[in-house]
Image (cartoon, rainbow over the protein chains, first blue to last red):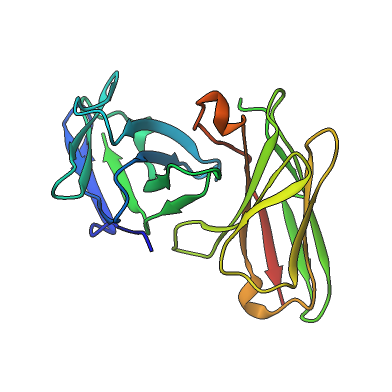
Length: 115
Length: 115
């Protein structure tokens, strides 16, 4: 069975600074996807960034980038130039490459961005 | 705006009652997944529906059941409600995996409280 672990329950960062959220996972699969989702107080899960395991290049989306270490089963999210609107819960998620879109989530990291 | 809508937004039920939650998938999506998010936890996969058939189920008892309609909207039914069923229920829609799309779009959830 796959598991996803987020060891940082809470993080804080000053506006315009950089912050890194950690995620590790456990799987015996070789082909899978990893995601970071943001859940603001509105409760709606919003996809931040996605990484295919077969791609060695780290994914980037504007201010968001990941450090994907497949051998170490590590998938951290770096947020550059943090903005007040980045304040939210962040969930790391794993998806096996099969015929379902089942996401396995970590317990989340609450990020607070201070002015 | 993702286009996935859930109703109702909030609901209070008594232990032992039955509840039906509804989800309208985003236009063009034929797959709907349901997740249960307990307070302070990451979402847990309940089940998925693809073209009106159940296509994968998580570790939830049979009193959690679902339906998908020809227009790809979906219902989640929970019988014999227990206090531990109190949670945020999230619906996510996506396109057929065979088309290579792995992005799930989430609704804002239904907050269910069982008293």
